[in-house]
Length: 403
Ligand SMILES: [Zn+2]
Image (cartoon, rainbow, N blue to C red; front, side, top):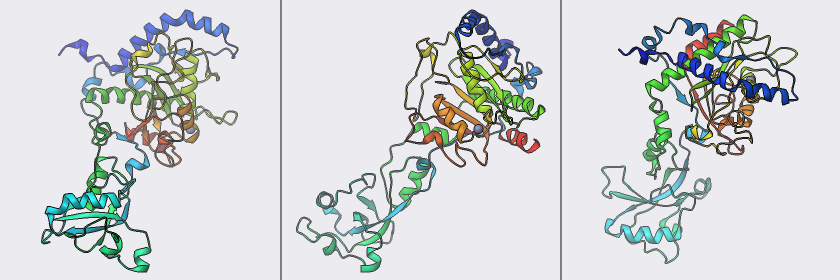
């Protein structure tokens, strides 16, 4: 095998970061001197070699040949819920030669506004029926049929706009209330009544586990291992065992490594908040001093070409944002790998910092990215991002259990 191809992702990352740190050190000093914030002592990433990675230069490629976890997208409720059904009137088509005319006339009377996903005609589900086709007439009024009984065809189509010749007597049927958003919903929906389906291939790929290549999963696992290492460092100091890293997917550089640092004097320093602040520090800003937490580290973020950002997909409202100094707005285009699902505060901080993707290992009871809320999918927020769970889930779960 070609030895050069066996260099683990961590080594490449460290090499990249070493170069970057040297290139921007003078700019950093300049920014620090201009900053009104307290002086911040931040360790450079080239010092951060996670213990889990120390002995991996020779063995990690072999280790990563099998990926012992599955990754799942955390979709919106609309995408992940079951198919909601409503009652509708349908009729058998007795003379299928008249189908075209009947569709035209009935559509003019009942255009099914807001229900364009419903097909007007379906093949009869009862194979023994002498009438092979059935036609949707209109939605039923909830409760009315129960009180007044089933409407007849002449009651549903009282005027002369429709020549009812060729139609049988109406019956009630459950139809999907909304257009299916995923293939799973489509399969369920068509069991009740056929619908149109504009498949989102990206979502289908994510749901079927084909969105990420094996090589990408190996890198993702490396990043999560760094987050686990950070969590362990924090736990050794009595912190909650939660760790996180921020990665720039365009360069594959790890920009920040942090762990939970909350204390009675600063209860807000959850791992996510730590990492966002570290990224801000790398951009010459930031608020907190992590001098007493050596595992919390940042890389300098200069020289990032905004056009190098990979295509931002799905729900992200704002496009790549940059400040006057050419640096991205905090986490724009970046990815967070975190051992546990972030809480509401952290999820909102991720919205405000414009994160592109979040990968968390295990769910949290108060989690805001799938468990209790789905902050990342809210239509009333001005930024949305993708969320995936499951990378090294067992190890991430053990961190919490063991702490
Ligand atoms: Zn939090």
